[in-house]
Length: 254
Image (cartoon, rainbow, N blue to C red; front, side, top):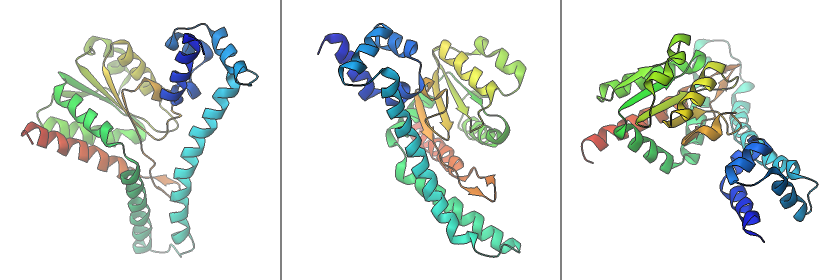
């Protein structure tokens, strides 16, 4: 196998998420080869084209999301047959599903990602948070915790703040984005601006299929509980709290 073919193979192994999401031109640019080389690579292994390889990885990533969701659905089936007629039953249903979602996060969390986030936030000159609509409570809580830990931070949620992001961002800034499907265009654009500024990006979202997932330096995919069409934030809040408590211990030299 030629050197260029090996580069493509390593890219497929190391960055399956980017492979599934990016265009042929972007992938070729990332690897440092011509798009036609990707096509030759695919045909060398019996595929009709490179898009066929990408399709396999898209299915793989989507299937992972489905498996996560199925586990939440299994928990839902325990209570969906119950009569939801009073506040006590609703409370029981909400707590049971949130416990399941939080347990799912605990079982699948990347501990290295948490540690990388803690180190980045401790070393940042400034932290900028962006989370709108459903994600706004997470951004607000993150800001509250970081501010109490003495970390300089700000929230950039409105249009004017996002437009001025380039004035605040640099390679010493950590940009935290929180966004869930349907993904907010304002947050998407803000992440792209942060990437251009070489800021470290921490992304909290619901799936690797998020169009900006490949831009994140640290990616957390959190599959929240859904209760009677209302999506929770409980598991994400637990993650934020864990990161901030870890920062507190780090500041004390522990």
